[in-house]
Image 1: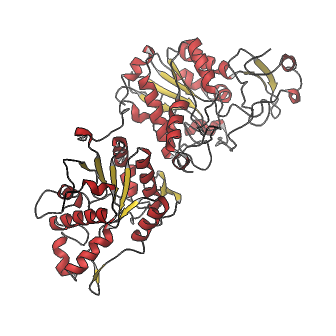
Image 2: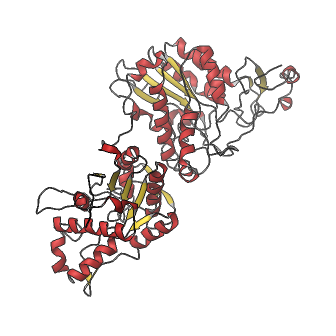
Image 3: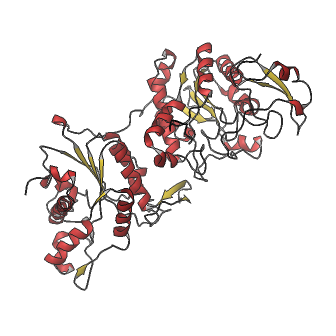
Length: 540
């Protein structure tokens, strides 16, 4: 009896008969039409020539996989989907090793081995590395259509089939059988094979956890038997998705429940790198010596005596030149005038010229996220730069609404990006902070020195409205700095000329006096809200 595959001796005895009697293959649980190339010839021109990235005598790290590693034929994100192989090079020193993403959408362990593997094998040199993480497509018919299924399990069983459309005779092996063939071939070339489990799907089990793929156990068994390193990517990324919750998990995928968005691809690449670096397998030490950037960037903060930290995020109205008395200042530089730093630490993480989108894309938000601990606070204030053009430099515009929406844009650079709404970016930041056990607080944008009929400009029908909508939808605290500061300037000034002392050089950026005033307005908003963060303000 064939234990691993569940195919009985009866079926095995029938394996040489008509294709119509071939036993039923594993079901396609992904439920999507994968991005399969029109022809292998087209696919070969879209992917890098195997070994072409090699620099001198440096080794190459080859990535073998399917669309979760390289989406579609081009792998350029033009449909909003990305494979994690696109980001894998970020974790390796290019002066020591190059990374070649040889994966292709729609491939199974069987079809990749039969149709794409040979030139890659021939390009492998002694000292190279090969990560094999493939299996999502090892399902469907054995002998018709894509004919890409492998026999489930790791046994030595095989099945003789005749492909209905072509009449080609083929021997089909178990999933483990194909893994052993990859390992054997890599070793024959003097390379170092690594087995890595599959990326998780956006699917939950009865306990509310992300489903773990059965291929993990098969890969672990083959790795142990063959003496090769194994990294459980399925578990590493699955744990993160379990922690994220359904809303955040959903945007790590795009269009379906298996293909990842840029967020999901970057997360899987990070998990793969973490798994490699954390491995105690001595065979991986040479590769680990060529890795970099695996530990996420974070802020060094003063937590003396267990005091919390308030992180302030935003644009130039929060952090500017902040040095010359007669220069431009952001109110975050004056946070120490209102917060008691004996009881709370302040990190002004804002950056001039940034929008929600660019702040996120540049990794600045991730640095805050990586630094958070339970009990911390994050003040989130954007808006002045989010109205910019979406697809042109400086690539910081967001879709102008509070509703959750997104669109795939082709940028002037030729690259593709899924751009979200202003409200969506705020909601992401809020959820990220809460995930870490910290408290998010929205702070509406500062008013500009533009006046009509003795009143300073208010943007309550756009950004002000969107802030309120996000606050209502998420239940997050909102400090309405925009209107608090505007009320004060209306009362004190009454005109653009008289309000100019609060601004510097233009109608947006504040002077030192303006920065101090805005900081005091933030404090007022916190007190009026009876905010928990107000407990860390200086006594009046």
